[in-house]
Image (cartoon, rainbow, N blue to C red; front, side):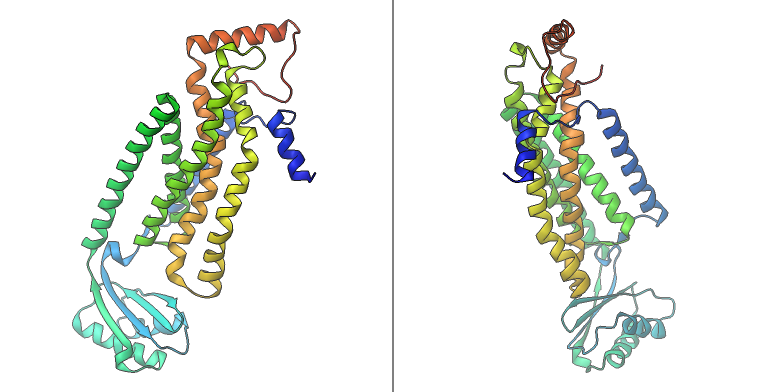
Length: 338
């Protein structure tokens, strides 16, 4: 049996256990610090780097270029319009995209001519268009609507499936944290917020929810007969469930990260497929944050929400009394601190 399989077996049987629930204060403090740091870095950079779809501006596309030098496009814009800031991206093999603030007709013509000379292409290879901010606003509105509908459906369906609103509450709070931290990390890196990035933010919700349901389903199985439990407290049973699904959570994350990481690092950075960076970064970070949030935030939070219930608290007290009387304790578990 491999070392990973042995480790997984020890986690499942409770012979090896990590105190995910028992050290909830530490995990919550770390989660808060990460959120504050990511938000602080984003604010230090002047907020989110909104793409042209959200702020409006002029966009040029140069095709059939021999060189994908970004600096050439930036010089072409600055020489024509010194006050304009240009964002140059290699969006596909032989194709460059140049985005600037809104330009008038004369400025647009001058930039177009400079781009022809900079990349050695004909007039028919350079196209320009103006993008208004209203389209980006519409995308943002649809994103908010989609997010609200998604969270409402998640709350209702999880409450019905797991038969407790506290599990739904823990899941939704965790999903909010996943989106907030992912957005904070995204903003801290300075990547442009584009419609692709918005799609990425919404995509990670489904992944994070999948991992949450897997862990919560095991928690429900472990705590279904908790009032008859004589060896473990409610928090210890929740902690056991997290440990039992830990290997699966890690494997699922790795399987998701590998292809997305390939798109992000190989496709975007090495091959220059700039259009892939936005959505790939959002999904890459979101997968990692989503898995960690399930283990360190949502599951411990659910244990905290339930431990104060009268029947659960009474049974936990009986378990601890038996343990104090020397009747034994479960191997490899931890107790939720009072």
